[in-house]
Length: 165
Image 1 (tube, rainbow, N blue to C red):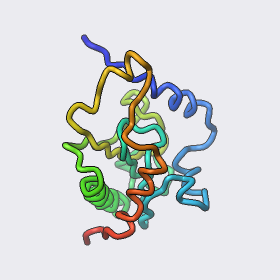
Image 2: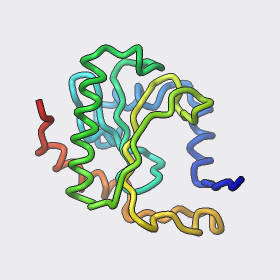
Image 3: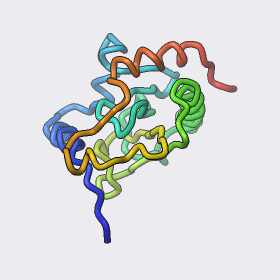
């Protein structure tokens, strides 16, 4: 069996276990979307940049309601989450032209959820060759752009793009 190391995630995981407050609930409470890295606010869910991304443009879609299980969500919320996924894919394709995407949820700690008490959907743009030896050998993650630049590039697209009915 082969193991893939992701040492840049250690800082994030250690921080999560020390926190008393959910990162999504904390982001919602901030009055400044830029500080919270929130790109879009829907009726039931919001889109936020991942502060510790796997790749540039790594987004998360989370409900406003603090809820651990997706199946416990109301239909309006889960339907809107799907619409926000479509919106996210459109914006990321337009701005970054990735070769593909990883999308999905890790529900429960045993499934890899860093925040198990507030379900959320990951949208991760991928490019051929975006994984390299730097993370394993140099314990360094190479990103195309920083979070602020990514936010500034994506925000106008989310403001312009509309969700499909």
